[in-house]
Image 1 (tube, rainbow, N blue to C red):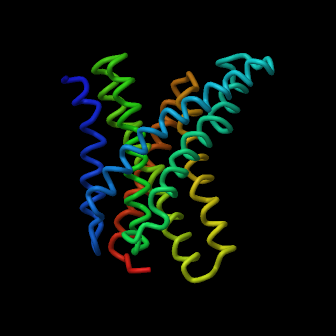
Image 2: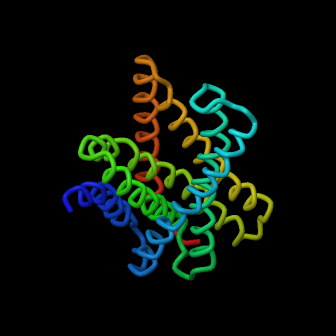
Image 3: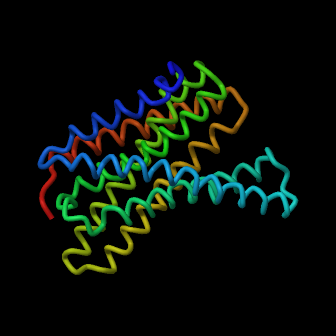
Length: 229
């Protein structure tokens, strides 16, 4: 029970902070809960896609753990699969929902999906590897998923505004960026973390610090400047 609590707490805290940052109009409780649950579902979908991707790389004769394998796997399989399925459930659940009436709502929705994903993933890792993993992931992986959600949500809100104003081409471009940007960041996160060198530990810390900083700045700025769409 304590391990499960340690796995759930970081995501729960971030959910509360993001929910409270919604300045204009708080989202319905039932809606954000459903997004967390769908985020959990997307974990299984992404896991299946990653198994298929790993099998394809094996058939291609690319050695697991090699630099080439890690680059292909994290940038072309893990990042697109995890962020792609997050976006799929996000759009399915919220795009036509009448509660989606402010641009910042896109950030709230995307972060809740991402934290649902992180929460479920975190429970598995923490139960397998214990307290040290709980602490490490509370400081890196869970906030990392929240950041991916922020960048996804920024473009999701922009896409919604463009579409409502009849700018379909710009809206479609923004929707593509909803997946491409977080997938690239996710791939960078996992790839750098896979490099076994002391210098890359420093690179990883700089990378996540910069990502956390910019995501936090975006949340503050977009929350304060939010308006109805």
